[in-house]
Amino acid sequence: MNSDQFEAIRQNAELLWRRDQIENAIECMAKDITNDFRHSKPILVGVMNGALPFFARLMLSLRFPLEVDYLHASRYGDQCVGDELSWTVEPSVSLQGRDVIIVDDILDEGITLAAIADYCRRGGAEKVATAVLVAKPKEKNEHVLSADYVGLEVPDKFVVGYGMDVAGYGRNLENIYALDDQLQSLLLS
Ligand code: IMP
Ligand code: MG
Image 1: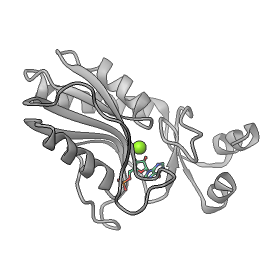
Image 2: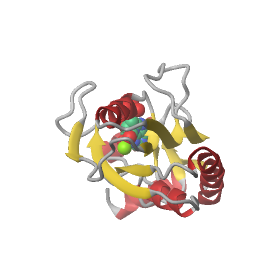
Image 3: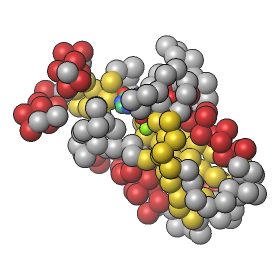
């Protein structure tokens, strides 16, 4: 992505959610998570890289004891076919007997989160919950898994910003935008 393309997203792409709206939604999720986990010293596991800004913001709003860790797994990696996840980094804290909250950017079909949740259970986690910043509508793609905590809904379009990328770029856009087919093919070409 070059600077003109970056600006084209900011100027021409459909603005779905502004930073202040996103951060309000994260505050609401933090309240719900606090109610459910404040006494269980959970591990908050961020799915890199998309979860990065959401993860940072969320953990600063959780005012109870917790540990943080991260993993790097993605479905849309270069060599990824179908439901297979490519793992780059696994969590380093033992999940045995722990409550784990998996934090990710977006729930699309839910395949990524389902596979990660499964991995955490196999690692001995006592309870596994999932928190996503945004979710695409359920009607179209019946989710394999629905998230326990969802910040905001987005339409069934390709979205970018606040952690989410198009071909590796755009994660640092402060708002969330939807790309139309024309802009998307331009950015992916
Ligand atoms: P799922 O397995 O179908 O739920 O896909 C979820 C993963 O795909 C997310 O963690 C994102 O990395 C990526 N993804 C899905 N939809 C989008 C999108 O609209 N924009 C950016 N990344 C997306
Ligand atoms: Mg991701």
